[in-house]
Length: 346
Image (cartoon, rainbow, N blue to C red; front, top):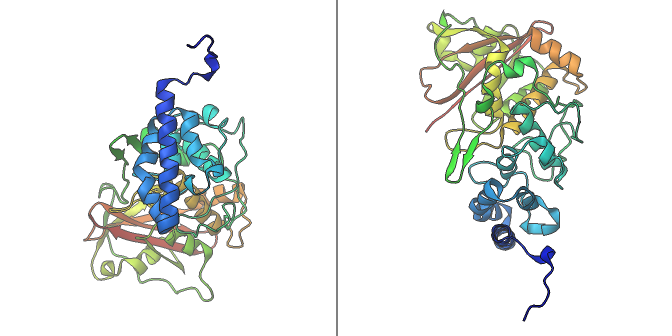
């Protein structure tokens, strides 16, 4: 017979359910990691992790990332139709997320997710490193090694807001999947016209520009080149067919190109899931910082001056379907121009 019961010992049935699922997730991930390595661990536990990140009480969901769980803890790259940290970040405002015990790389990405969703975190600035490692970097890389000593603002600047609606900036997650808006570039032929591209400008001598590598690294289906010349001359490097006939092309403001570059930087593609919109934003800022100062000591003022003076040129390709990006970026101050172009196919 129970004669006395401490109400603090009672666990609501719903919380018990989620706690048990968390335990199952950790065991599944740890066993898969032991027998098949990190990739197997992510794949075997992905759907269960998504269920927890999407529906569990926020503190239970945050425990997915508890390093004390060892091989059973989720990392930055764990996810099903999207990274688990992004699934959790879209559910709650930063005031809730900031109080959670999260690893710093995950905290950084969640903070920038909330920024993309419209929050201004500059008032109560959280502890956020400069820029996490690129999506394709090895897991042993230092999360704070950005290649550019630049703290990305914890608020969207006007040119980051202009080209898309807040609801389209981050993937919308459901129990059975996700909806990720896509931003091909150019998104249509409106505003473009027949253009004969010039011959490409002279190639640069010496080692590759850091910005070129950063732009190419936005996602696996892009190529990038750099030359001394104009944006159309750079475009001609990656659009050789346009040298023989007129191309549908034209100039556009950088704000109109920004969403497509962020989406590419997230790693999204015809067959690949997004690595998170926040990762795309940080990767693009890394590329812009390298364009402003190849030595890696760019200031915010220098980056803003670069964005203000960039001349952006886009064009269409005959093979374009859904996933495509064609953009040339010219910096009149240095005389350099970069072209980034690619397609991915369903």
